[in-house]
Length: 265
Image (cartoon, rainbow, N blue to C red; front, side, top):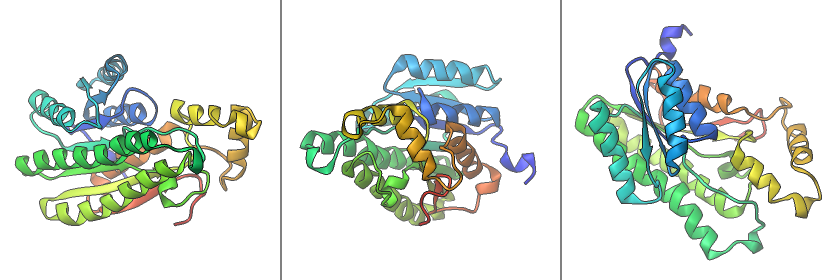
């Protein structure tokens, strides 16, 4: 595929949870391919650092403070992006949360906190962005960050997290059908084991129960991966760029595992 097919030059992209990890990697990859990027995060300092890195790549960057589990905050976030850039072409719904826990140790608070951000937040970010894309009339791209946990991977951080990501996968398929007539594509990416601060915290939460250090747990996880390596955040970012580029213009309603071969469905 030619470099042109991966171009995002002049596109306006919004990435949630962009202060670190996968979200930051996606924001910077978009900038590297020519997009102007709004980096949204609940931590304003983190969002600002990502926006600064975006600007260093010769495109426009914007830091947006947002709580993606709060519908009003989501509305303000999208409005800020449109006020600043004039439109919204791409949104990546990446903000999420989890913790390591067995099913019998999970609580109602875990349910409410996880579903609030991972499922409710994704839905209302998707809906709010789609409204703006429809209003502008030139279509758009919506990418939801799900997880192989939502496909039944047995080593999910916890059962509630798996349920939240399974909901995102189902939402992606339905939204793609209903938004297709507006030339809006909706796809999801299911990362496997990916080296981020969030994943490190999950492994830290399992040190006592497994008797193994974070490094030992990661080594065991990589042993189970057919390609023998965990994802870098850039592996996820590369798929997000493809789905947002000209090359992904006729792909919608799909869910792509980026996991080194861990899950086959």
